[in-house]
Image (cartoon, rainbow, N blue to C red; front, top):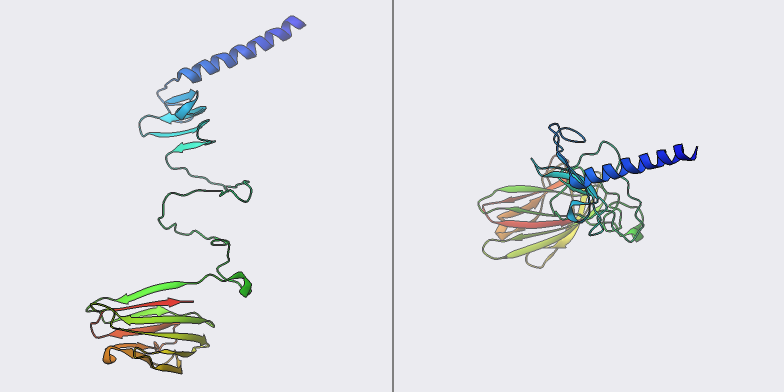
Length: 236
């Protein structure tokens, strides 16, 4: 009984030893390993990883590393058909990104710890900021304003160097806006206007630049120019 049991143990140890030798030396098949194209498998240490598979044809690899505290390395793109979950505790970023390129369809619950929209002023609702302009020789542009909310608009003539600038505080409610601010000569301006009619609000450069309501009820304002370089910013 003891001899039979020892034979089983010796057999298991021998199988493990042969597997370790094969993985350590590496091997190659015509159709690859773990799927067509995988032609190198290794168990070891260093940059090759504790265990990994590698395709020498396209340089794609996947493995487990012992160095640099990297649990898993992937040399190439990875596709997942399920959820990716992180259990790392608060205080350690669950992901690090080197690229600063935009990520389409990324929907984050918070940015820098704050919600983008909140009914509680103490949450410090995130600001939205747009820069817009009319290039030299241009004629017009439009920019968005928020519904049932307040925004600040700054507009300036930027031909050569900034010549004139004006700013407004605007609140919208049911297609109507109320505004107050200062024109390019330092005079206070204020009033109301309907988004369903075209109404000039402020002018610059002797009337060559006009900020006005759109006339179609859309939540935006129009800027027209007679060929001057115009730049502006909207914040809310």
